Length: 130
Image (cartoon, rainbow, N blue to C red; front, side, top):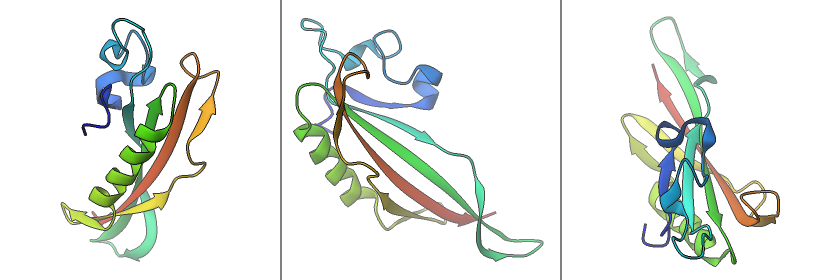
């Protein structure tokens, strides 16, 4: 996404460090050292969804968490989250249905996070069968 000039990262890219000057140096401006708008994606474990199930086929659920970060203003990450919702909500991939659950707290400023930045968390749920 052109809005996320600091990049898109996953847990596989960064491990437990998520976004940080050591784990994702390209997420920061080389001159000002300010955090650029970026995205970190992680997923919770697989869980029974409570839907269809028998000995051979079981309904499963997984939640993906998208963490949008920006320093200075939240406009870029709000636009990126809206674009992600347009692209991802109500999609089907690999026989799994993907749905936007919500943005639990909207864009908010957190002074403790990466020296002070905006954070917006979006959650998506996949439901499929094993």
